[in-house]
Image 1: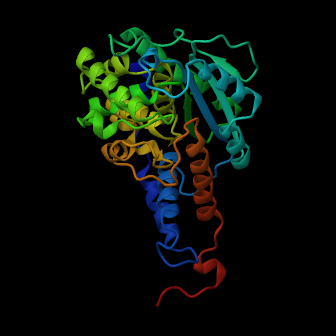
Image 2 (image 1 turned 90 degrees about the vertical axis):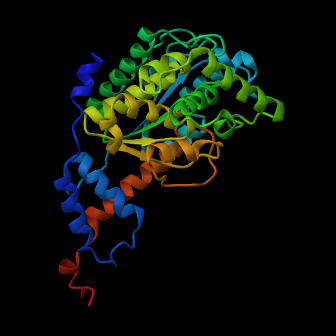
Image 3 (image 1 turned 180 degrees about the horizontal axis):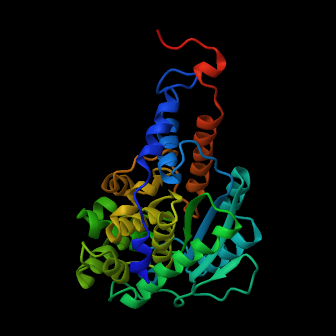
Length: 349
């Protein structure tokens, strides 16, 4: 089934991109004066296969899951906070809810592998693979079958939202301890040392940071992931919510939709997605550069330039929400600004 999804990913439309670039050159402004918004409008034209397009339906999907490596003392918060924060999302009280309301985005919450019990809720999608992963310092996080199951679940969640309206997707996550497997994934793919990737996550102290670095080193030594095999890395080092995020990326690309990557964990998922299917790369937009220590190296590996750099490190999809507003702005500028001809304004001499 995963092969069928990958087979549907097509290259974006370069003719649409060229037409959008040509229109940008005719708008009533000096060429390039809208900076990255111009580049973004051209990228979106290629993705949507239309020289001028509109973003009406913005969706943020936040994947939640727990991690066995939390037992190594890698987080400043206890594992039950994952369950508690998912409940907060469902009540509309978290940062992602506030920012989603601000930018006019619909939020979808998915239980991919939360360890605690969550009561049924109309806004909760349950795709639970297991109640948390195994401890990656002692062996694989999950089986290879579970890794593929998590990815396919992400594809299913994405495609289930299409009928409700989905023009662009922001990806978010929640899972106590998940910066540790994300750092391990980044180390496996970039070849960088844990010391150059691992950050403080939820705000661990110096001792906690050393425990995180040690946990990532041990996970890499014990599991020996294959840097050329994204599913192998996911199964050995990842999380169920990270697999779900990979599936969101594959689903978005297979359906010619733009994907706004959030922070550290979402970027680790993007690295895995590109390893599994390099053709997804043109569909990725980096919303921001996280304050988390190794995020810049991860973005560099992906070749993505973030839209924002405002010291965010929360996750949930908060940076992606702000990125969605910029994507909509880019499309509106391209569509609604007058050309020199329309406005009767003299062009550059």
